[in-house]
Length: 372
Image 1 (cartoon, one colour):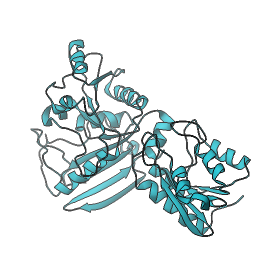
Image 2 (cartoon, rainbow, N blue to C red):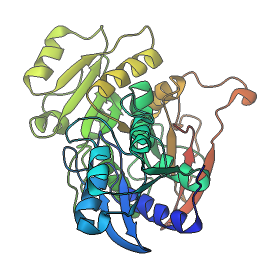
Image 3 (cartoon, rainbow, N blue to C red):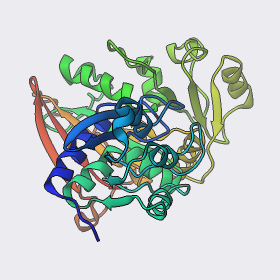
Image 4 (cartoon, one colour):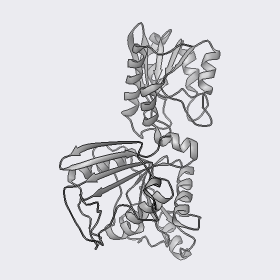
């Protein structure tokens, strides 16, 4: 069986870099990059720029033109073989006369899962699938897509800012601002890269947030999601007032008054009744509904109560914590996670990977809890 060469790995790394350059741009489709090489020269590159548009392979083939004939294409994700918003990439590869395909990662979705690679092999095209570090990197580029494909639920990134003594708010609920300006700007970039931003009703009432990505160059805004069991989201809030322009989903329980839910719907919000006997179950129910809408990624910005419910539900996939150079003290100051939690250290959730970097005076800790 043919394996990758050092030259292959170099071109494949470039394809992954291209995919990483467009996070969330093609959602709910994955981030994909492609590079076409003939006689040792790169003759075309492509990225999946937006949902419904040409895939990375097609864009790379268009850039290469006739030079694609007899060439090798390097793709960060296996080419699709089904008709969706666009024709199958396998057909484009065969029509272009490409003779070899090198792939970094598999596509776990039901419509793919190796089908495209099998079709290409049947047509006499050489197929090589990478493994090792590059394959792992390619999978990490599409964690949201991969979780959604396998579970139907979106990937969840929990973001919080805490003090040196691990507090996220004073006993009165004051939390503005624990992190610095550069950290808050970075969080806006994260909003621009996800499909939805979620908070609890406590945050919605206390802060009246917009939950938008307020940065230059933002090409889209995330859906705003409020977990509000009793439908208390004010009709004059910024979230509701902007619902006609930026989608707003309010997650309620069966205990919510129908008059309140109808008022929210009349104001332009989507109201979802989450099922389940306790909050973690309702979190899973809500995520399943969001997944049905094509939401593949959620940035969880809610307070300790909602974060605890997500944690207890086992639905936090990655954590990003800003650690600020301040101390609060006080027994009643708020911790980042509430909920039921873990009773024994031996049963604690352990991060698969963890990194740290300085963001001006803050320290950003990134911890990946699951890999999909």
